[in-house]
Length: 510
Image 1 (cartoon, rainbow, N blue to C red):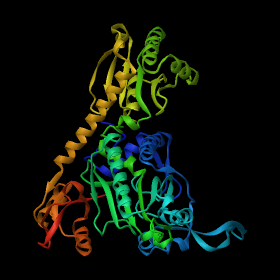
Image 2 (cartoon, one colour):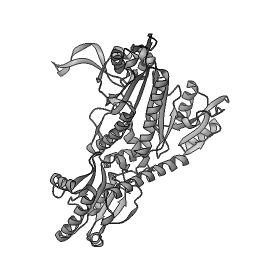
Image 3 (tube, rainbow, N blue to C red):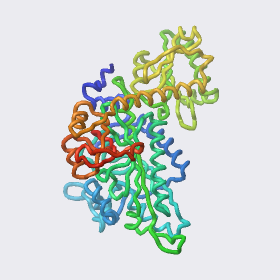
Image 4 (spheres, rainbow, N blue to C red):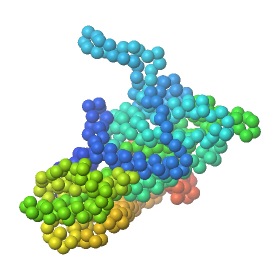
């Protein structure tokens, strides 16, 4: 057990922060509630971007960029939207700094305050109104990767910060049906990504009226269950109907030669996914990375005592790296590397995933611990005895399985197969944990007991009512996470009112 990480069972919140610190993923910044994402953390975000961006483009959307600052008047055009975000907006009121009696002070007061975007529906709606004139201009399918700001009272690295990174897709369509299809299509993209890349099993579902996005007709989501039994919303997709198109006058001449408003959607995920990944897989020794977003997929730790042993091990390590990365990349990596440092070689130049060799002047145990805390999926240990046997000692970070692998078997396909196996096992373990922590409740008392004593997802029948949902949240801290798609048509007796309700998932959430 790592001494620099608080065990999960003792203090889960502190464990989470300790894992981030030990892996050097992020730090709090001088600005309250904001974070600095360090290179190790940003590499994970780049992996998320890479995998999601490809999936977005496969379905049609392309990338653009919209302004960080939004006129205050834009947010007042859609009543529900501003009601949902008003208390979280950061406002720019001046255009410069001036010298004053006590130093610099704001100057150049703006005629209209500007809002640092909490989300971009308003400014994008304004632009779509300029671009869309005819049904021939539809659909408009655009995504942007950017930062947003929402003043949060309680912050936690990656999970909830005042400024965070995300992607937000915004589309406009000719018909209501097309908008609904797009909303569900992107939800499935998120589901596939969460499970096939991050190895996090999620539940697809629809939010209740009380939980939906401000200004949306319908909000869909994917919900994951973390190791402490709390739920985490991992992505949302919103069918906005014609609410924003009417507010921003996104009109087009239809096929019947009549003016009509477009049907719009928005969908997004954020750096919160990194928090989800940490809490779904990591352990008391540190970070455990899903292979498909790991920058370093394999760390090779040479073990030697004398210069002669070092030369012997180095020659064998060279063969291993050439087998995995190719001769040309080995030569390129050697030029980039510094003596007695970590040498990096691209295993896959498209994804920028790497094999690293740790030549630092440190004890083998310290090096092993270093890569373990950073969650590198695989580790090869190579000492003189391994060289004599013609292979390496291979260790998996996820479950610490180890074995001896002969040099003749080491190849790119070998490593890819091993990484795929790790992904499958991580997903299976997380799925099993979710199944074991999903329970049914036939009454409100039973729901309260499960939430208090065991946590996890609680399935029950419930009739939507905002006031009742607020009461349940106040009494139990649990909310309706979603109405699962797979049971959306099931009906039964509501645990509170006794009237007919839908099957929902309750949980305490981040």
